[in-house]
Image 1 (spheres, one colour):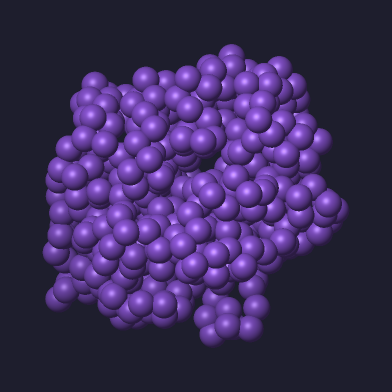
Image 2 (image 1 turned 180 degrees about the vertical axis):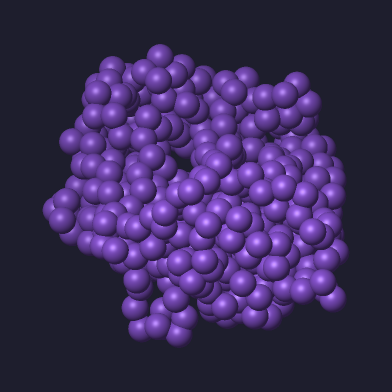
Length: 487
């Protein structure tokens, strides 16, 4: 078996030699677990042609392209075992089967996925979405085609404010149903965990309702949600011309209520010219930190607004968009990474595509500077109605100049770090969440190559199969419960 990288640190079955050096899964004598509806949370994926383990932690610089890939060869196909909903073994199929037998289990005790000819990766992590909203904004495409800009549409009461009006008027039941529908679309394309923002309420009542929608949807599953409070997404109509008064409302009314509710894990701010400048963004993020919410930032999307430097200063977990980041902004993020306090640069190529932008985030410059890169869809009704992270990976290779391996790293282990789950998600390593995707291609380089194709064969969340082709073409296997991350 050949490894395209130094080899994953599984701590279970040796993935670089045979026979295995050790079997150390931590569940001796255990019995097969099951979800509340009776489906096994133990799983065996066999026959794989390639397994991209992504083992080894956050990637940056030359490591951005290290997907820790294993390839089947004359020694046989590859396998992944999940026990009790967590990764238990990765390696040669014969070694994994031997390890299972060593635990007193028969392979037939585990649900089995036949991955012959397929590639297996961790479940994708969408590091930036705006999942809960009401209404659509298809008319804005025509406005942009006629020459209107993003901030001009917003200043005229459109853009975000149009969605705010629709969202405030929608019932919580309607918001939940709409978010549920699009969460299944994400899942269908391989996403098992997603960061989800509020930001279409811009008042205490509606912001709390949006976060409650995420709590309910996360409890339903199967998509795992990481909620973010984004009250500083725009200045609402009732505060028109009074941006400082609205900042005070966010700091003194919205943030305390959000903290008391206890659902949001992060606070985000749209740091942009004509919205919230760096000084106002800093004030909001400092107040959020006092309430126990970690920082993330919409930074330098349309103009160099000092967002990247602010993200580094505040120790934000991620700085997102960065299509207009300056050389100084890149240097700020590079210094933070070098100092051991990395800010993940979460790039959103579907947004610049849909905005018909003439420039994109400088992925290659960021990578060369040693800044870790993640990817997200920025799914939202105005600037990225695109719930498919596979497509964002393809756009990253074409528009941003990233390799297939760099894009895969950005959509898995680095994205997990960008949402605060870097120690538990985003890699096929022993003890991590048993989230994985079986792709109907023999090697990972084909994931961004087949543009727009549905390449998913199976999706697994915490050891439970939630998408299973060909039945997945007709519906989704829904477990009895889901996963939700808060505070």
